[in-house]
Length: 125
Image 1 (cartoon, one colour):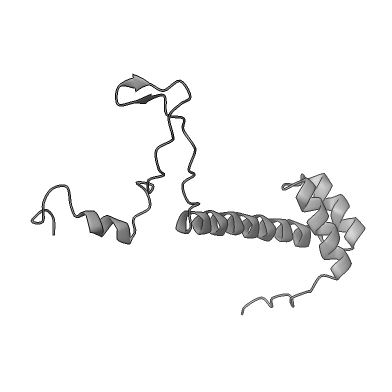
Image 2 (cartoon, rainbow, N blue to C red; image 1 turned 180 degrees about the vertical axis):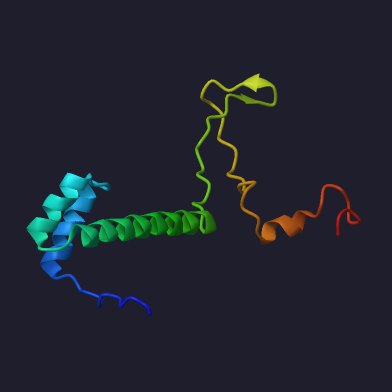
């Protein structure tokens, strides 16, 4: 003989709004805080406890998804203008033109194959 499960109860929009607002301020509730919030929302303490558990898990999952997206699509490396201080062994003192921008060593594209391997054609491949 199995015990009957309680039917699923959908919270009202007002209840969810109150729960979300409280969660933004406070991720964990003490037992008295949970009891007080449950009374205010006309829910059981267990319902509030489970809602907070589920919401913390959802928040953790969203953070992980976001970090995976950032790892899959990293920001392109920044290019920073660097003044040329010495050219051909002589100090420039503000008279030298900057060197032309070179492709970033981290951006592997079609330009790499044009130069070939520095180890020769027979290396690694």
